[in-house]
Amino acid sequence: MKPEELVKRLQKELPSEHFSWKFDKETNRLRLDHTVLKKGMDISLSEVIAKYEKKKETAIDEIVYTIDATFKAMEREHKEGFTGESVIYPVIRSTSFPQKTSDGKRFITKDHTAETRIYYALDLGKTYRLIDESMLAPLEKTETEIMEAALFRVRSLPTNMKQDEVDGNIYYFLNSNDGYDASRILNNAFLKEMEDKVQGDMTVSVPHQDVLIIGDIRNKTGYDVLAQMTMYFFTKGTVPVTSLSFIYEEGNLEPIFIMAKNRVTEKKGRK
Image (cartoon, rainbow, N blue to C red; front, side):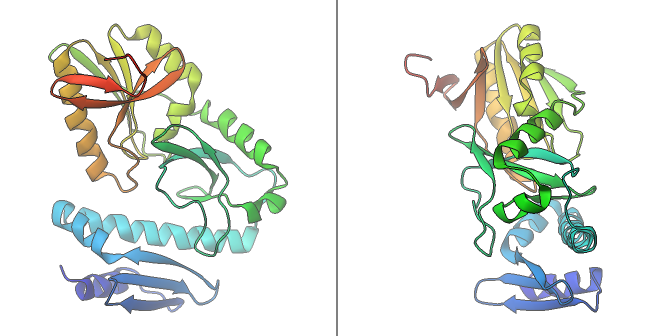
């Protein structure tokens, strides 16, 4: 699919008299503005086309849903505004994710690991909006209160998991598709509960925002399988986070690098 064809397809799937379309052929980027709200979003056509090559119509459905949900959230925000009673959750992003909005407002963030950073989201039903500094006053909260409220909320999310076994290693998958699956990595009580259950090395993986994988790794093969698994999910996710996994011990997360059937952590002296 060519960029021009993708633009025409999106215009067909998203008919609206309030949308203004601007396609930059040099960068293969599409700027979509809402003429009433005076807000918009930038879309990398190259990224969508790359996903289309792998996922076909599913990739189109995903970008159409994202655009539609985003603008509906903007319309809701414009109509209702924010209140101190708004629901806030933490979300996990890669450390390469932008720390400011397109118009220069700083997102509220907190350091997490060398691979991940915590952002905070205002839940809007089918989607959410990352909280930036301009939203603190309408929400009637400080940055610390935002972080505390989000951490409290993430503990209330269900932690139902599916289980799979490969060569004696156990893998648990959390994939509720509520937008906060990876956020469960911040639920310390849940991780401690899993640590008590795991018999081998406990690994935690968040390859993209809509999945969390916990591994009970009991032999070297388990690490090879884990590496392949996390890379697969990393390339398939709409919001990739990291293809690296973490060893979890006594409340600490250590990134691990899997090479030649061995694991190497960033912690000196561990192999």
